[in-house]
Length: 275
Ligand code: ATP
Image 1 (cartoon, helix red, strand yellow):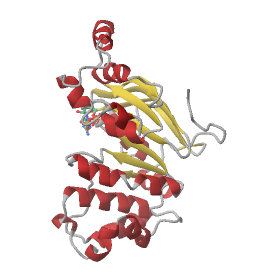
Image 2: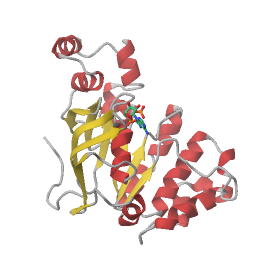
Image 3: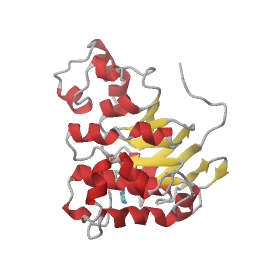
Image 4: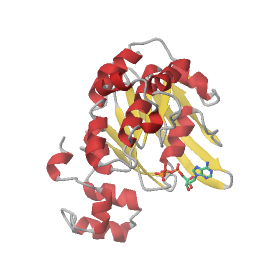
């Protein structure tokens, strides 16, 4: 059963979005609805279209058709910087920091298109206490996990209402990923809604209140982590047809040593699923 609070209406609504990269149809009629306070996770294999969806919501790709509404207003044609000042802010895949700038200078960049709100550079230092004494260090000299935290801080300084997080865990060790995701409760407490892309399904299920799986530009599964079974997620993720689905379902629980399961559920145990 859905635990969504739909009383106040959605904050973000994507309808029938079709996006092309040249001749390639990357998204084929994707819809999603994100309510305030949610952590909405987009999962799916490489090339499924997750980043394209996030980037289109941020205004970095123009859809061929479909619409994007934010706070009840159609923003489909709005420029990226206008979306940022309206509160749609993205942490891009690969962080995209300015490596020759210091940590603090990178955070200041985030303030360029900032809304008014609770997040300041000082508050980011409270969230990530290690940053304060290294504020003058160039981000090029920092580890991947530290750079990812700076990228999150830069987005927070813009005071988003919707924070788009693209593959936070990419290239990072699991322990670092856990540390980075530890910021999420404080971010949510400050009133921010989160839409994230995550290839690590176990990580996505740990934090999400709602999820959607994409495969080759199509939606293959949608629901809350409690509503979907592991078998359904595997079938949706890999595009298993009826025969393959039956095969996946016949192993309950799925073989934890199987190659597919390991790739899809790194470190997932039944108890971690319940977090
Ligand atoms: P990944 O996890 O590998 O980033 P993804 O689910 O985020 O995968 P996208 O990056 O959105 O997928 O890519 C969807 C499809 O669009 C892929 O086939 C990809 O090669 C293609 N694509 C993405 N960006 C571009 C681009 N700028 N130009 C051309 N093709 C692109």
